[in-house]
Image 1: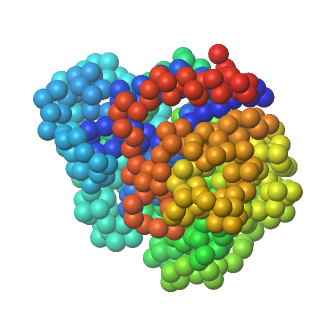
Image 2 (image 1 turned 180 degrees about the vertical axis):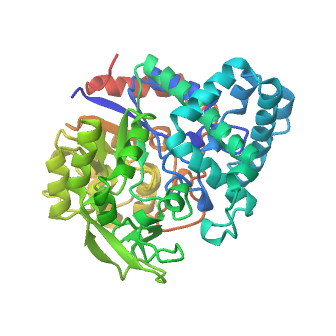
Length: 496
């Protein structure tokens, strides 16, 4: 495999005046920046529709796209909106509530105009999309229409679904149309990437949200009681992210029933992912060896237990159906011998995160570059980490450096290891990862920009203040691109 590198950035973090970033002009400018900076990879987080908490890891569907990412500007280009309808959008901080409200209005207007003008090219494309994606789209559109009818309540609280397909026909078509718009814009953006030598690394969570079309349609595939409520929920035990573990709350799969039908749902899910991206990062890979089952009613993940899962059998079934696929195993957290064995059996690259390297033994820490192997993806940090600059400051604590005894041991080791003064610690992180033997190297855009903790994307096991970072328009300068390009060439990761 040729050495390569890239940037981690979710589209919601792109500059925008519509509440959150989207697939419009700024997305194309970001791709241009990647090209100018000599990068060949763009890693995104999950792109599914988000619900409570706005987390891309808690989606209404494992197949649908997030319609909040639809670009109003591109709808104007398609003749589905007028420019004047965009003018009321204020420029401000990331605001999911505003984005939901404003874009729901715009999408409804676009659907109405579509119905009135009936543009032949869009009508044909839409019908082809509905036919091609009917295996998930019909159920999802019905789910969203019913959810709207019940004021956003979870499906376990719905009073009736009788005659819904006929009663809600126009609303079902509207949700299908919104999905068409998302995938049309995403396909165009992905094509723009491909034309410029950029591959997209996607991300799909191991689990799905309980309040999702997937669980609603396939309740027998999950460990639920007679009322559709989870019997046990997902999370991870205490680790370096959280002293009480991470309580995710997702329902867990009934693996025996999934095995009985040949893992049909999983195969369809993976096929859908690779219709959208070029490489897929499997989040929480260790859950395919054993998953942490937490009793319903607990508030933390501390009292869970490990339950074996058929990871090898599952992935072999996927390979038999779809062939060899470029998958990255997110093997962070509590990693045991069975997880390593499964990852190596499947020949999947794991992950290495430089931030984790400075708290362990230099002889054995897999996250320090001198212990890397080629078949890994090396990161300065991930969306779950603080930024490099923010981490360095938090390790350092308040005050200035005066003597070695005043410097925290971990910070001192970091400075010594990177041969750094600490003045541009983010570039020292990037250099160390770029210069490693790892086949792929990734840095979050926050680290390329040298931003502090205010730009952190997510704090695991917390429910507030996450997923809301957005970079400023104009931050991606030519000087910044040149500096990253020079470093990329220096370590042989440039593709052009």
